[in-house]
Length: 281
Image 1 (cartoon, rainbow, N blue to C red):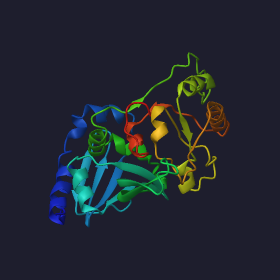
Image 2: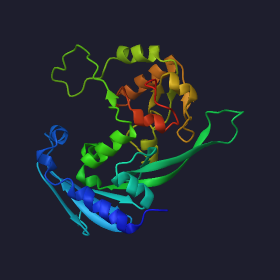
Image 3: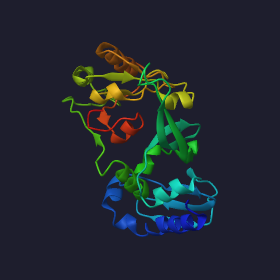
C-alpha cells in the first residue's frame, strides 16, 4: 500500500519545523557555513505540495504552502514512496545525472544484463527519478551546497551505512607563493595509479549533458581499485579499461585543459556502478 498525500504533508512540515533554531546548535552546519555569505533559498515542490526554506549562516526560515518569487534552487519530488523514504531518512539506492541548469537524483531499482555470456560488465541500470533540481545560474549556487543542509546530510549518511565519505589532502611540500593556482604534482597521481589493480576511464557526463564548451568532454572521472573488475561499465559515457600509461595521460591532458584533478573515495559512487563498496573502489 502506497503513501498518501496527507502523510507526505505531515512529514514535509515536520522536516521544516524540526530545523527551527538549528543554526545555533548544529556544530557541523556552523563549521560548514562559517564563510558563507548571503542566503540559500530552496523552493520545494513535493508531491503536489509547496513550501520553501531559506538558509543563512546564522539564520533559518521557512513557510509551508507558499512559493518564492525568485528562488536560487527549485527541488521537485513527485514519487510519494520515495518522498516518504527521504523525509523519514530511510536509505535507498540512488545515483546522479546531469541535466540542463541542474541535476537529477535517481533511484536505482535493478540492474539488467542483456547477454551475460558475452560481457557481464555491460549492465543496464533501471531507475526512476527521485528528485529534480533546477538551479538559477545567476545565483551562483553549487550543488555541493545541498550536502551542508541537515536533511540531505542525514539522509546521505544513512545511505552510506554511517560511514564517512573519504577524501584526502595530499601534502606537496611546496609553497604556493603568490600564484593563483598550483597543480598537485603528477608524481602523486602516478603513485596511486601505479598501485591500482584496475582503472576505468570515462567521458564526463556533466559536460556532455550541459554541452560544455570550455573543457573537453572526454576528460571525466576515473575509477580505480579491485572492484572495477566487476563494475557495470558506463555505456553512455564510453567507459573503458585503460592502462596505467593511458590513465597518466588523462591526468596530464586534464591539467593542460585547465582542470584540477581531485583524488578521493566516495562510497556512494559505488552504488552508481553496481559495486558493493569494500573500500577498494
